[in-house]
Length: 435
Image (cartoon, rainbow, N blue to C red; front, side, top):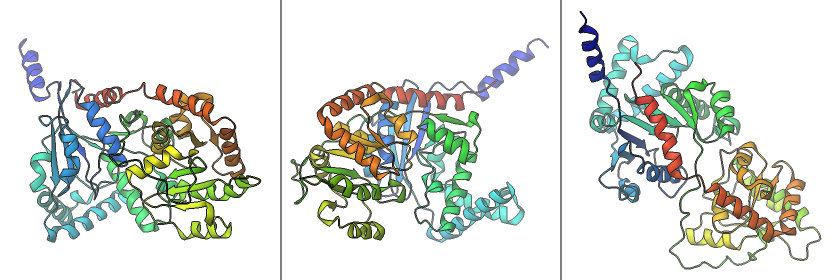
C-alpha cells in the first residue's frame, strides 16, 4: 500500500514530463509569406534571432506559403541545424471551396450558439472528414512542434498543439476603411475563433492590451500578455548607390510620411495643414508620400481643391535606396496616425538621422517614452497643432535631433535577447505541467 503513491507519481512524471527544451512553430503563411524585411516579418526575423540565444529553444519551424520557402532562407541560414523552413501545401483543389465554406459556417455557428458544427451529427461527421483530408499531408510537421506562435490573428487553420496568437491591433474594428460589412463581420468571427482557441493572446503595448484585448475582445487578464518589442537590430542599408531625390523635391525642406494610404493613417492632416505652414514662407515646405497603394480619390481631390500640386509628391512604392535617401534628406518624418500599436517609420527615420514628429496618441507616447521632452507630439485632429509642431522643430532642429537620437539610444538598451527571454517564459508557462 505504501508503494502505490510512488508508482502513481512516477507514472504522472512519465506522462507529463518537465519540458526543458522547446520545439516552436512560427506560422508565416498568410496568403503571402511574412518576409523578414517587411511589416510583421521584421518582428518575426528579430524574434527568431533572439530565440536562438535562449538555452531552452531546441528547434524553430517556420511555415511559408508553398513555393515561397526561399523568402525565409535568410532566417534558416542563421542556424541551419536548428531552423527548418517548410511550405504550407494547399489541400487538393476539389476540397478547397467546400472546406472554406464549412469553416465559415462553423465560425458563424460558434458566434451564434457557442457550439461547433464539428460535433453536430452528419454535418459534424462531414466536417471531421474534410479536416482529416485537408491536414493529412501536414500532420507530420503540424504535430512535430510543442506549440505554435501565430504572429498575426487572421489565420484560418486548425491546431491540435497549443497556440499563442499576437494581436498587433484591431484597427479595422475602429476604422473599417471602406471594408464591406460582410467581410468585416467574417474577419471578426475569425478573430474570435482564433483568440478563443489560443492558450495566450499577446500584444506589444499596454494601450492595445487594455483597449483591444481586454476591451474590444473582452479577454480575461489571465489569458493575455504584453511583451514590448525592441528596436529592430539593424535597419537595412541599401546595397544601391546613394539615390538622388526625385526632381522637384527640395532637400531639407519636405516632410516625409512613408505609409500605405488608409483612413487611419490620416494623410489628409498633412495636406490640410500645408497651406498654413507655407503662409508667409519665402521657401515653401513640401510633403512627400510613399506607399504601396494608389492615391485615394478623396486625397487627390483635396490636393486639387487646396491647389497643392506643386508641393505634394506621391511617389508610390520606392526602393530601399530611394527610401534611405528620402529619410536622410527630409526635414522630418511625420506620422499623424489615428490608431497604431507602434510606428516602424519613426524608428527607421531616427536610424537614418532624421528627426520625427509624432501623433499624440497613447501607443506612440508609450513607444517614445525614452525620448522624454525631446519627442515632439501633435494633435492628429488639428492642422494648427501640426503646424505648431513643425515650427517648434524648425526653431532648433539640430538640438531636437540630438535629443531624439539620445533617446533612440536609450530605446536600444532593450534587446531582442530580452524580448525572446520574455516570450520563452510564456511558452514554458503553457507547456510545463501543473501538478
